[in-house]
Image (cartoon, rainbow, N blue to C red; front, side, top):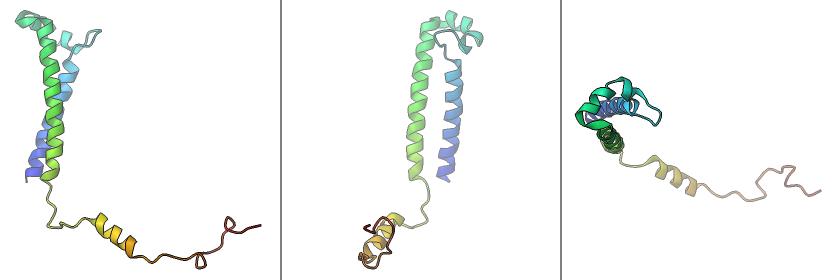
Length: 112
């Protein structure tokens, strides 16, 4: 249940992050000028708006990174605490080594 909650919050943060990045004003002008760039100038100037958008972008990006890492801990493991990699490595160690005489001869191993 908590994994689904993390997934919903991650998707919400991702959508908001996409919108914030699209609204930012690049060097040559962008969507922020057409979506109320004039109104933002009267509220505190373009520089304050750009600072707010930059801080919001970084905050959302860090939040999304943290949520993705934390969501890993909320995945149910169904009680299997042993890792399959350890079992595979144990099988490799228990396999007997083959000698050279039992290996098939190839063209690379023959001396001409």
